[in-house]
Figure 1 (cartoon, rainbow, N blue to C red):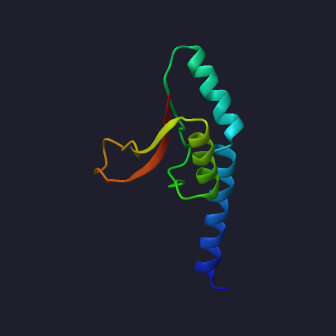
Figure 2: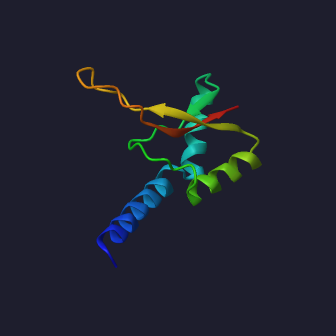
Length: 100
């Protein structure tokens, strides 16, 4: 295995494990319930790391759960906050927003 292939696999594994932790339906359901109790009608799954996790198995499983529970959801573009002293770099990644 070449170094690039090994690095790709390490990155893919890290993203998969992160998505598995982030998109657990039980965790999302608890967060939605808490927000709904406080009168809110949307929840954004805020990611700590700027990865596109929309195609992961965990995200697809969560989408299936959201469909079954009749929630609405969309993957919205999120832009990294830029340092004001550096040139603007147009980097974005999607985060999941759920509404009810």
